[in-house]
Length: 507
Ligand code: UN1
Image (tube, rainbow, N blue to C red; front, side, top):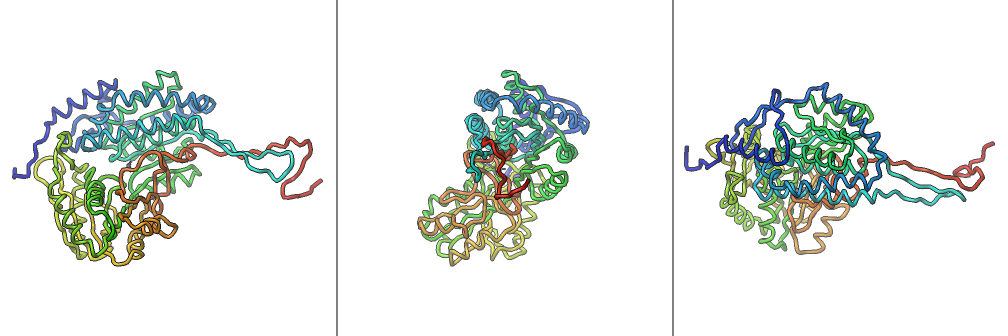
């Protein structure tokens, strides 16, 4: 071991942590074959779990479809009560869940707690939403007619979630789906079965507590085959999938081929523009959290910094100094700010991207080293690039921040938009005209556009998602609930006469 070797908990410590959290939420570990629970903290395999079989997926879809029949006519505020009770259980078990998020996703304590907070927040939002599934009344062109739209439950929802937000993204979908009247089948990432078991158990307890139909939620543990069974089952009305663009390219067309709906949250390649008027202290803190926080493993992670030439050197120096002081290591240690990457493949992808960046003319200013010892711990990397080369246009799910410089603000916006992905973006400026230009129709083309904050850490109250290869889906707040419902347009004629629209006369 070299001086970079980290002090990490033992495998036994970690197994014990998992057991304690699972026991506290009342979950039983489904020991068996088919799926291995691992931890990125040490890279160890922790438990062998029983995976869901394709037959079991099919019967779970059947049970969910049955539950739908009862749930769709349950008054929405009564459905909201289930989500309220679930939110209370999340509050009670906040640290149990956060501990498991750290164990399986490698997040540091405050970020793991933040993830659970997102779950609690979306429950609160959905409870209120359950009394606000508003339709509209529309002006009819005919006398004595009422034209309106009503939102009805859609059907069974399949949620496929990623390792990096192992429970929050499921909760965004599930809280909304449940108040909208839809049962949920959940296929979590293979990397995060334990926290999924715990979260699903809490929802199951809420379902039991309010005596809602037991088939409202099913956890499906397993690999790709489980996801495919959901994607291809015509009884699954909506597939909400979070993951890579590559995954979305398969899921989207397959669901569309059977005329199902999909909601896709795919890759991002998020940029921040830093203008000469920016408050550099605020910018520095915003950039370092967005780029190195969560070890670069958020879909909203800052991956490109587009800095005005006049402030580039100073800002790069300050970011480099901050990067060198970031404590990397055991995510359970309160002092740590950068935990591990999820697995060796992620660390290999980072190394390969850095090699490519160098080959494309980049200069690694700091970071990029893999630390010795167990677990995939890496130094966040800061890389100056001569332009938006091939590697910069791709999403590498690791802490690499590419720095590009610009002279003219329009050029900066063009660079920001000139990538295939369109999730999140931000501008750091104190010039109001620049901020407004960035937010205008010809400004950022992303689903999320921020001023004077980084690209990550969105609140649940807004709709979350992005354009282009990010997939176009919107989840979480605002009117994202509409994705989980079907719209019925109704015309009622109370005039006593038959009048055809568009003045058509017939018979
Ligand atoms: C994700 O990385 O998949 O905006 C979701 C954020 C979080 C959600 C990220 N609220 O960074």
